[in-house]
Length: 117
Image (cartoon, rainbow, N blue to C red):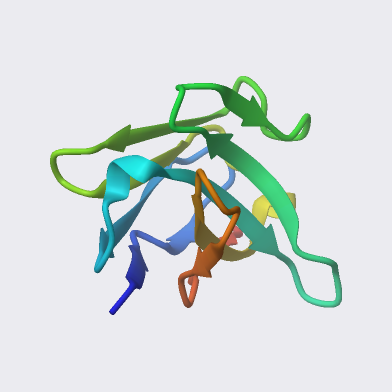
């Protein structure tokens, strides 16, 4: 059974940092491109960062230079290091896995990130 479990969210002050983790199970992790999305209240879900199986990385313009996506295939985990956080980064952050051959997607249940003083 495919499972994606996010962790690491919480409340942080503006300018602070958090590292999100997404632990995967139930599939061959190295065959999946991994992404982080976020959804703020009353807004559409948006792509934050993605990392393909070939190592291609994409970031949303709003997080470039502040966020870093990485993966550890030995631990079946993808990370999102978030620095210099801003109130507008407040959202539920979701992990997504996309199978490289069929574009089948799996989603985690999300973790809340709140940036506030």
